[in-house]
Length: 301
Ligand SMILES: O=c1[nH]c(=O)c2[nH]c(=O)[nH]c2[nH]1
Image 1 (tube, rainbow, N blue to C red):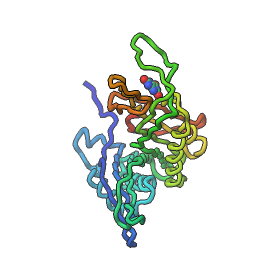
Image 2 (image 1 turned 90 degrees about the horizontal axis):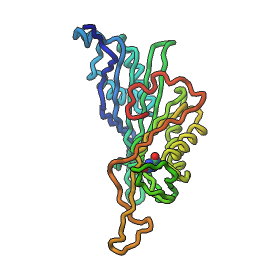
Image 3 (image 1 turned 135 degrees about the vertical axis):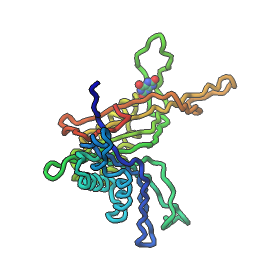
Image 4 (image 1 turned 90 degrees about the vertical axis):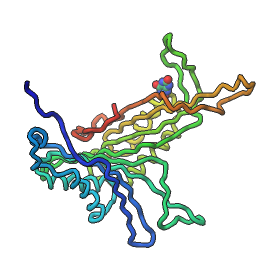
């Protein structure tokens, strides 16, 4: 029987790197979840058990912590690119490095109306992320950056309709011209190149996604996502494409008529599951080739 090793990669997942800047009494915090993986010529590690080419996952983890001190943590995209380049340099058998980083947002606690210097509260407005893939060395080097946000939970209490849909004998959903629209948005966008002011781009794209969600009068979550994605591509030439995965967090009007109480769109039950799951990509006609940018990104169509 002929068998061979198929696609493989290895690395350290979810190193929780917390970097405090304490050079002044006003501390700063960067709270990261770092995952790295190497792929390339690692057949022997699998087929014969020879680990000569394997930079241990433990070393990858140590490097993330050491770089947080030695190089500092700026934009997560820069930190991921630095780690990716380093891992390729340190591991001759590696053809590609994938570094994924999530950043958990902290806000300063207000005391007597003033931002406290060293006390923070986790903020609930979405988790920033990046996935960097670096391949090749020297003139052959190519880097792909996909950044995004998840757990961005948004709701509009009107300005959302859903009607005119196809019906068959199993359709019971009533048409509506006024419903709650809510989702916990996952958005990831692929950058065209790496000459980007990452923090500025992220802040503006997040702001734009929220603004468009509010502004767009929705006829379906599909149409809202397309509008949000189009706005990002129109205003951000550095973005080649944007992907969304959006659970439709259904809010059903509660029937209060058994109690002789009217309910004109005021009391809802927030259903946990099942949920509609709407996924879409909005892409420039002339987008650059994605290459390995989406390598090992689960949960998107
Ligand atoms: O925005 C929506 N899109 C759908 O495809 C759909 N299907 C459904 O039952 N409700 C909704 N809402």
